[in-house]
Length: 247
Ligand code: NDP
Ligand code: 8X3
Image (cartoon, rainbow, N blue to C red; front, top):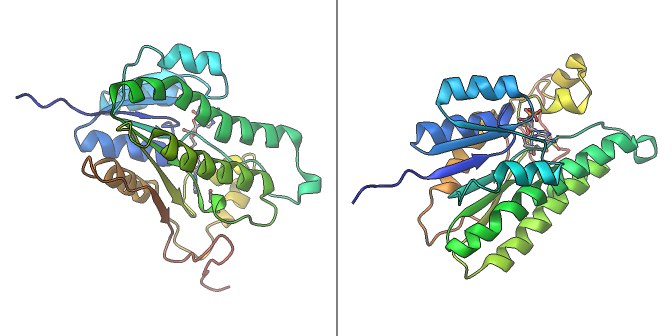
């Protein structure tokens, strides 16, 4: 019997956790399809991994549907695309930042899921893995809307798992603490110095650490679902408790 290579869709693979996951799945022998909005970076990944690429904005349901509708059934859909914008008291928050976070982290994840999940349920297999956050477990100061978006991801994950129970489809979430990616640069609108200070005096996770966990979740035996993983750097105990050398 020939063995069919497993197929994974990684959203937001042009950077950070997503690109590390794409590489980890590729190394493990999976067929990889990657998405993002930056075509040049998708081209670089295709050249490196020989993967398929899809360039679209997850906030746009029509574009998401057009890109994914004829993709068939994935063994794993990794809902990773996401971002934070701003870190300030709620009364100073920017409506544009709020909309971007909610539209990407919550509605974008729902868009991808709504297009791909029916085929998985019909086929009776597949695994949706959402990238949540420690911000989905704790609401920290100045992060109301980002934390709300990741609390929503956890709620959606938990409801989805109940909806799909018995269909053969697995639903999981991997929820990291601080990971050194472009996340903080995006949060602080390109302020590199402020972004770097997020990791002052501590050792954050790397995208590769998250990818190793995601791959482990994806490759669990068919009867096992690693439903929820909270993955922290050893220097972090909670959203607000971070051990920093020299502080
Ligand atoms: P990066 O900024 O490095 O990567 C974010 C990825 O998301 C990029 O590939 C970006 O691609 C994609 N993306 C953002 N907006 C959209 C959009 N509208 N449509 C399509 N793709 C989009 O950050 P991370 O790798 O750190 O973040 C990945 C996920 O991990 C996010 O969901 C984040 O919330 C979560 N997370 C991050 C943590 C951290 O400390 N870094 C900790 C916990 C969770 P492009 O710009 O090309 O569209
Ligand atoms: C990203 C980690 O602590 O900046 O979700 O919210 S944190």
